[in-house]
Image (cartoon, rainbow, N blue to C red):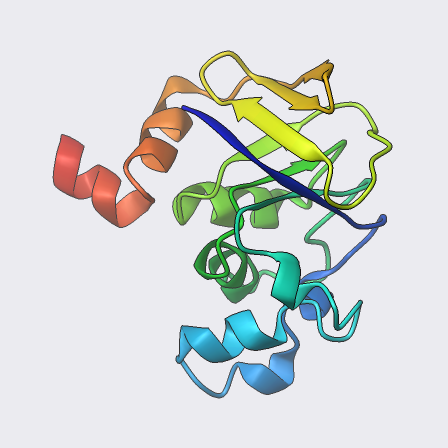
Length: 157
């Protein structure tokens, strides 16, 4: 899976409450989550998420196990999340909803830079600079290719 998008750059230790605040979880209407994504971190981000690749510093998705954070990003049209490290439950939630994740070294970026990634070859390229990432297992790649766990089970079981 190879795709191209634009960078949305965020800092370190962005927790799941900053991705989607708990006050918006009283509804299952995912369009509400999309509208308010990152609202407490930077209210301008939600409008830039469609077709983006989130480039984060270390420890993205820390804080809680709420899967709605990964769901909100996918529903908003985020193509992938790239970071030097992830909170493990966020990492797995992202895979489970079919959102590609890449563990790389720390990347300096500017919002809007072109980003290409290749899930099969495990790399991310930003404005021509290529960064290798830790490879995902073949099963995780199939889950992502299937659009998440539900699609994976329908396709492979």
